[in-house]
Image (cartoon, rainbow, N blue to C red):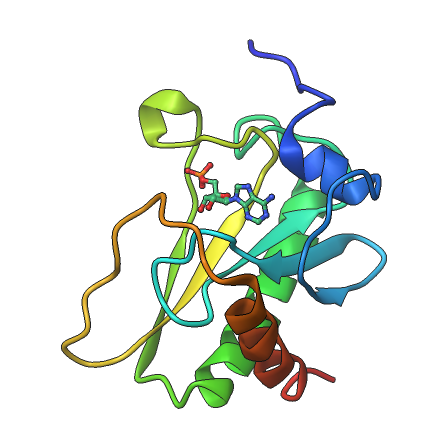
Length: 139
Ligand code: AMP
């Protein structure tokens, strides 16, 4: 069993030690823009409490996170007039996970538009503009 790394980047964001372009927070979850987006409006949803991924998450963490995933999916769909939304979630390195704090990707999609490549850093002012659009459709 692999343990939770308190120094992963999302733990640092949660402690306020690293910046993020925040979209939404409630008692249990936080959502912010992915800095290497694979689609316009690509964002992430995480629990505020520590867990690596699906293997150690509690029912309470999963319930809270999936509710925020739904809320953010609905907001991004409207914000970008999307035809659909892709939700992705990776578990452990072999499953494609790179940051070891549970997170769900939400990516608005348009007919005929493929996802972009991973690992390409976004322009932060563009991300901020996109975040404004999403926030406008959140309660
Ligand atoms: P994965 O663990 O494979 O789901 O990938 C982690 C995701 O987190 C990637 O899409 C990265 O672009 C994203 N990411 C990494 N660092 C940050 C950060 N500081 N702020 C926002 N997103 C990040």
